[in-house]
Image (cartoon, rainbow, N blue to C red):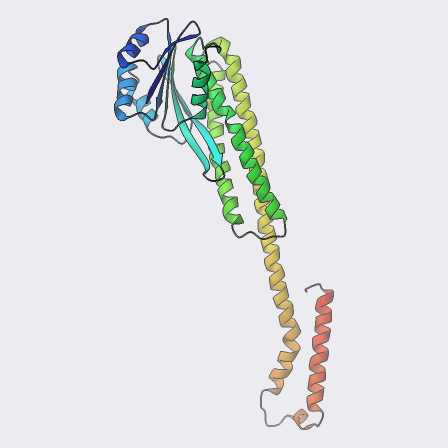
Length: 323
């Protein structure tokens, strides 16, 4: 689906134009054009990216091919950016959606396969006549990226809630059979998020330093603020990841301690029954000449020795706190 927005002097003057009208607006140097490709068909991709804007084939290939890492490429008259929006729910767990941007002096083209809250939020804002429109495509790009980063915060809050639940289970006496799988799943979510946030921070860093001619100098402070937000998110994420690894270590130590306690109890049980096993084994050998068997008190002596040695062994192990 193709959505388009046309701005003039900071005002929204048209939207969702036909293809031929888009070509005319593209040729008009006084207008700002934003085209959003929301899960487009192959024909729509070819029409807009190749026909209307004539982007480089490599940029188009990178756009339509899913990428796991953010990136930035500087072409002659536009920038190509790969960014990622993230989402997290207890049911669906961690998920990311790629958002590609072509940023020129007078246009912005966005491409995504799934609906994005940042895009829908910005279009709703622009549709309100009381809200002034952007005076440049770089401002539009910043607004999109800012909303995209803002949506990281509730996702981090959900991950933090799940981390606290894991810590509570680990520190409690109750055993949870699915805890290991949950730990590994959350660890994977944190790893995926770190894989996205750090490169995305590097992308924004390049824009914040003013390395691209597509970003006006007046917009640099806004991109620096966006970079700082990503830096804070990354630091928070690192802290959460360290807490998760600590919880995982505690769980492993706790599991090892419980296993050692079980082994210790079985060893103590074996030691307690050792005197009875020795005496029973000795008198069960059926030798012909065993003088103590001929004594009238041999049975009582054997029972007394077995009972006394078992009690002494139990007292000794009790003092050693083996059970």
